[in-house]
Image 1 (cartoon, rainbow, N blue to C red):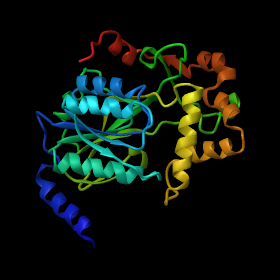
Image 2 (tube, helix red, strand yellow; image 1 turned 180 degrees about the vertical axis):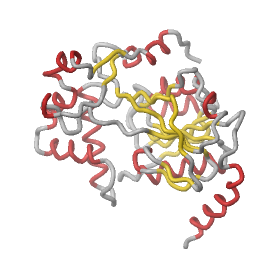
Image 3 (cartoon, helix red, strand yellow; image 1 turned 90 degrees about the vertical axis):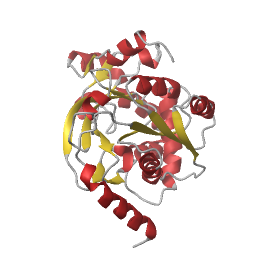
Image 4 (cartoon, rainbow, N blue to C red; image 1 turned 120 degrees about the horizontal axis):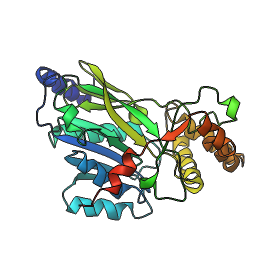
Length: 302
């Protein structure tokens, strides 16, 4: 057993007494793994700061747009506590997020941790995530994910159409990895007792573990138009080809294969249901949800 594992185990045993204690004034850290997210990152930081996040730890993976300029701005403001410039070209997402979690836990004394992407907005109906974190005795909270339908004629913060899971994809000729696929829940977890995060941040292993469902919703802007979709799937697919594991990123691998076959662009219409959008609305698979749009309509940047 190596020294790193022994250190983790020792820390977890010390954590045991506080693993399920209420935290009336929790210190909440969000980790973010980003690459070329200048279109969303600033809004993401502003939104989550307003929702009660106390600080951010950010890993940037070789961004070539203005993402690092935004990171530097919010590091100077004191919102971003730590910045890691990851230069690797493989996709060790799980390892990189784990590194940020341990920094949040050991260096900054986080009570609770959210592991997010720049296109995710973690929304508490009360207006503050800590209203739930401060009263629960659980150490893992499940949060529902909702994907937003891309409205390319509007800024993303004005979108008001969410989508539901479509069980019969063939009926609508939708892609096997369409916007309407089943959404796995995401988790918020305590720092105390943390063992391991899963690929994609959908599950976490704790010792011991007590999981609760919550009313926190994660609004996911995973598709923001054809160009963004193409770039994301091509870049992600290239990185996953270098990834030593074969778990996780199945959708990226699928779309990257289509890209190499020259079929990715036509698949995009099957991903968002371009040809059947009216039928999807009529059948209730696209519906109104203005929670994030309402937030930004009344929000002033700090």
